[in-house]
Image (cartoon, rainbow, N blue to C red; front, side, top):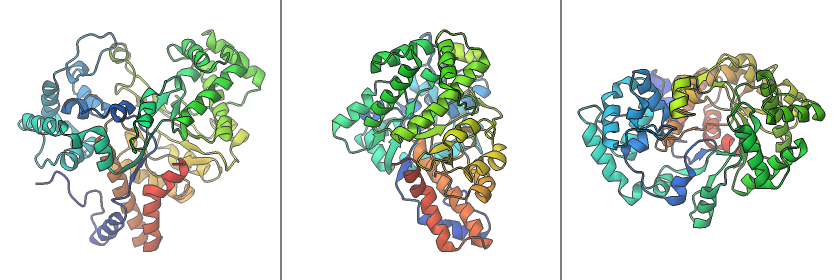
Length: 468
């Protein structure tokens, strides 16, 4: 029995379902353009088999292990490494059995749909995962992973990925991207410039990171002008490795446009570790405006991902480090926060700034009106906690009336879990077709318009917005 209903996520009313099904048939097999994510470029550089089912589906996926942690499962028992190198489970089968015995926890969640999509469509499985089927699952997937057709590059082609962007720190040497390029493989894997570690005074090692930036570029990063020039040089280095975008994961959307002398003084305080929390936030805000100006120079698309209260659990941060499932959304202001940047460059149509949010209350109140007015702004798709069928539908319902479709940028999967990529894109395509079918049925779109829009939302807008 299939794990997935063929008409999943389509409206239940028969006529609407038929419309959605027809729209989906026209776009379901379009190539995947994945402009923002966190897959490891080393997978594609070395093209080695994935080690075992647990390391493919469980250990790298914070959606999975945070749910298990919420029910009292220790992260070490799931193979999540410790920062001190202490003991953590390494037996893939034991991890898998623990995961399988808790699989019922994912009922009704997006993760359940993504996982079942991978089990069925990637590995040909037609039985439910449970404690009783855990070993059968493990053996079947492990057997598949040993075959050449399940290595990263083969799956890349099988998934229909046209291009995928990874995300690297500003000081990364991009060795894996260089290896991919030199290998002659025709799969397109590009990087994205993520400067958080060298623009956030509150991030551990900030001053050392800035010094490294100077060593890599030959600029004096102890001086404000040299620091900005070093960013320009690194951005050019990233562009040479395929980057078409930068990515900024700040706690808030705050921007500033300070006089350069004031910005230089603030930078000096940041290097000395003397910034107050408000000054640190102001410096991050100044750097968003500086990065927007640099985007006008070099053409990189700018992504702003604000609103995550990162590493909320001090004990988890101390034991396991960053990005271990304990980032929590918070209220986010955009109208006042973005005004300095928008007053500086917001009317430039040759600049693209893509805004994301974890605060859905801002969709119709702030984000859609902003994107519906400023030429530089586009709305990123539902992200992270809202990367769900309901979240995607709420996004369309709350933003389309003001921003339309063409001030959005299609879909991105933002994932570390490779097999979830086709699953996530399929969910987005189904939800968009369901929404468009409703507009047709209520007389707000012609069916041929809906068909064109389905193609744009799946493929055209993302290619154009990210210059891919």
